[in-house]
Length: 352
Ligand SMILES: [Zn+2]
Image 1: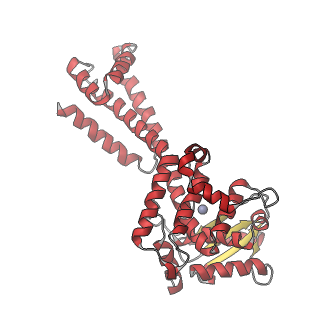
Image 2: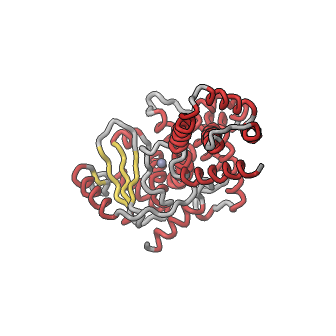
Image 3: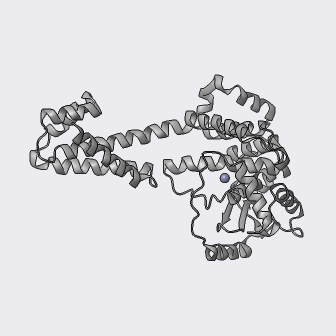
């Protein structure tokens, strides 16, 4: 990695959102990137000084603000009615960023800079390929944290909170100035007072939470290396954003995950406790101590309808479906959580 990219990464790392946890690097797929790049060269328009001078200038401005050497990035435009931007990188010192024609046509020069800076933020922070098809709730939470980090490099890249918020509004709504008479000042003041109208926020959580997160970050005064906020200031801002995320988005998700874990623990305990085909008073008491009288009553009800010879089979089936349900929610932490649950169940059984 050359020194210049080192400075760029250092800058991005300094403003990484606290919940955007660094993952171990994925194995480099340089060959894969080379092949894809070849495809882009043949089918898409490379942004260059000669062919697309205005876009080229914007890119140069962004590279300068983010300390990225020009050789590290290849940027393409391709024809599409969708408003999209993406970043591909093989975790080395190079990346490819791509923009749809619709996005380029829709954004003002400064708004375009925000989008470029956002995409390059994913590259600098080594977010890897953003896996949009991996739709677990866990990955959604992770993706949201990455977006908050990338919005920050976007803000530094365009050097204007107004432009950044406008670009986000255009991306979210798909609208242009023709229909979007967007008064950034009004919108921002609405955000500042948003604790008084929490319901409104809840209906568009990710957009408003991202905008609020960027607004708070901008209030730290961070618009370049020479104006760094202290670690304490940034930590305070991140804490407020985490609260927002928890309140409007992740809270319900985390609750769902907790319920799924509880459900799996309950069926596993029922399965263990009836292994000897007996569910005596002592075992029932222990079960209700952990899961409550109501759950005990439901379990007894459930067992009542099943012939003794089929009880284990029926409970195995329940354990399996509870386990599947949890795995869908937390695919990467799943194995670890199951081990924890099994230990806890054993602990409950042998404690009495
Ligand atoms: Zn992004």
